[in-house]
Length: 408
Image 1 (spheres, one colour):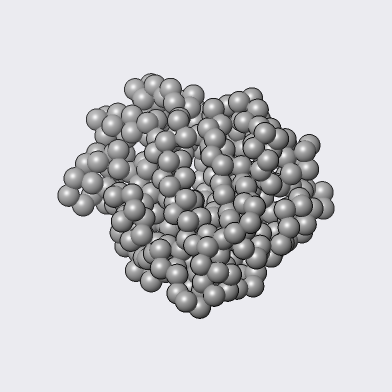
Image 2 (cartoon, rainbow, N blue to C red):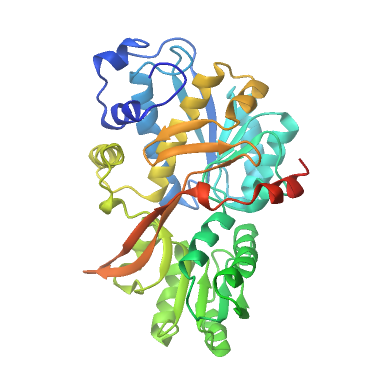
């Protein structure tokens, strides 16, 4: 892992636990010196299906990085994991503790968008770097963006655009929206309203349902959507809310002869609980890990399965890429000073298990992409078919719009 680039060769060594003589020779067989601590806060209790595999994969990558010599010329990399309480207030207190009592150089993580925005505001106040790995709201890198906050995953705008472009050429004009009533859901719904008419001229929204996160009344929600008689549905629900919605929708025939676009539903975290109730033919974003054949990515999958005796989730992939990006950042900056780190992050390119990921300087948004495909039942479990990897770089906000939103 010589120089400032975390290469695909290094990624393979870290993922498989194999460190070649040449790789070790760059820094020694193990990292030495004071560890570089990264404070990682996430919804490990409330959103365990995603965040626990995410944490597992970070540790898998970090162990490989440290065996290969660590970061910044030989210092061990260490993530300090804490639960963010899934509320903005709790998350800010946890973040403060990570920076002060734990002595972490900077912050990473969070899951819910409102929590991510609260930690981003703290990072701006404290002038400490924050790599928001999971929160998807556009506000994080647009209107409420700040110098110290960067985001890795594709945003709601990026993923919604992936789905609406997959609908291009269809004649589905009457649309209903169902989304959780908090920042992420509202952001995704706003993007859909904006983007669907570019793909389907004349499209209109005939119904909108915004149940409280984690408390969906599936009967009432499905009933209201059915009453509006839409031709298509844009779904943003996830987790237990998605499971309840799908079960009720299947029972009442809501999805019959209707075109559905659904954010995140192809991610194993949310598809596995659906089991044989998985609706077929939905266009979704997700992670069809079992269909990955790329050697470096496949090595990560095999290493994850061997270590944890489980299949990877989307959270697993995100956690592994997070550690790769963080290691590359530290090697480039060769410092834990916040201002140096921010400058090093600008247009930083990292060769990850999903290919190149660049942290675009203008909006501090990563180009990590995701997979788009259709849901299908295989046996008693849902899967994705007709998949393609959508590179995030192709779906980002136009630079002129970023300048207007961020006033840069």
